[in-house]
Image 1 (spheres, rainbow, N blue to C red):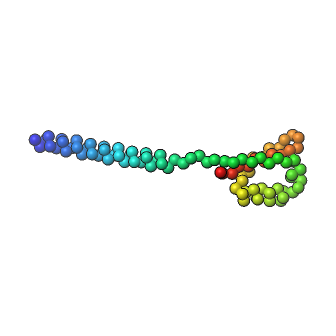
Image 2 (image 1 turned 180 degrees about the vertical axis):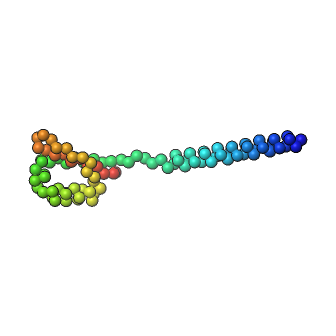
Image 3 (image 1 turned 60 degrees about the horizontal axis):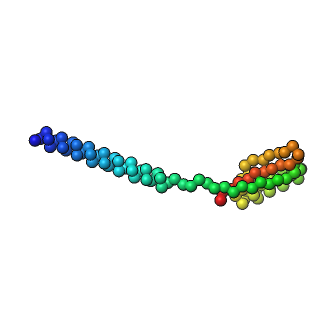
Amino acid sequence: MKKFFFSSLVISTFIVAVGIGLSACSNNNAQQRNNISAPDRWEYKVIEGERSIHDQGIAKTTNALNALGEEGWELVSSVHSDRGYIFLYLKRKL
């Protein structure tokens, strides 16, 4: 009888421990699902100019880019074409 009682106690304790563990895992997974945020959304802008934009002075170009930066724009890339044009690619979060 003692052996049966002890075995029942061990099995019951094991079942409760597994149940608590599974419950904790389930709650953790639910919290992780709730913490997933939507991906960032972006707005893009392309500025086209002649390569002579550089001739206007680095300070003027820098001031123009800084003004765009104040509006949240970030310069991502610039491309110089063979025909003397420059394209500035900017983005900002929506």
